[in-house]
Length: 149
Image (cartoon, rainbow, N blue to C red; front, side, top):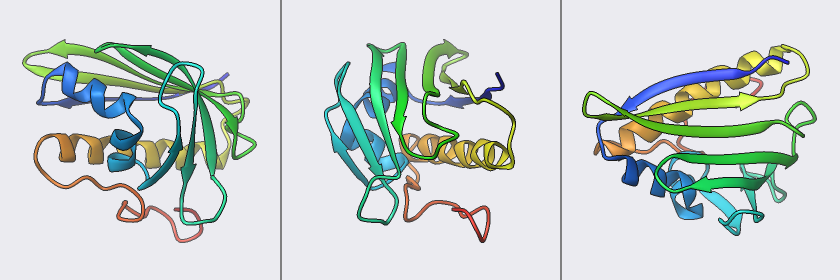
């Protein structure tokens, strides 16, 4: 099964990166401005991208303080359902390294390619916001295609 993988270094402590990734309000700062649900292992977060219903629902699988956040998609685009999204945190040269993986895609579709580029912009927005610049959560995100956000 193919996976999406990215690596980004962020010049802030691991604890700060983790607290942003692990909290509902933190995710609302860097991915989409409307997130509902419980940010705890076994809880579910619903992510809204402008519509009245969630575009994706993630079950929180793992919250390992300062090291890992992992979700499993339980509702959303059919290509996403059953996939996992993880953020692994390490330190290297004075920065926190986020190893991002969106794993378990059934096949490398055009939508997967789109999502890979989109996840990269989301991670750069996370870095920007944590390092003192602007967060770029939806609806202020980087648009990469006319037909898909």
